[in-house]
Image (cartoon, rainbow, N blue to C red; front, side, top):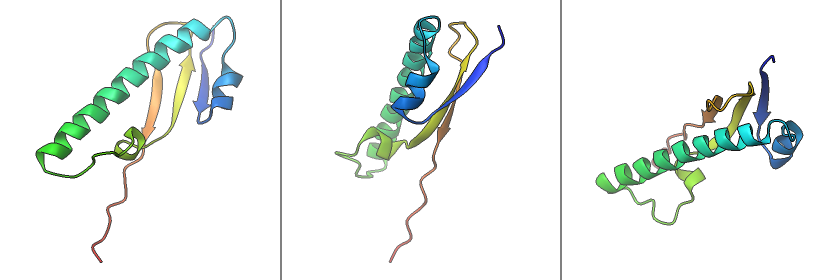
Length: 94
């Protein structure tokens, strides 16, 4: 089976790429991605607290913005996906 690549930005994108044959593999890969993402957000919150940066009440996606991820459907549970994390633009002091 040739691996297929899916650019996932919306829920509709997910709905269009999954079927009975690949749903379990997709869910394993998505769970792995989300675990990694949550760990990155957690470390970012710890780092912000260490330098006394106020991020209290901010959403995860405000701390570590995500635009999309590319899921590679190769039929394996090997957590193959690509994530695009947006680097926030530094604010200029006014």
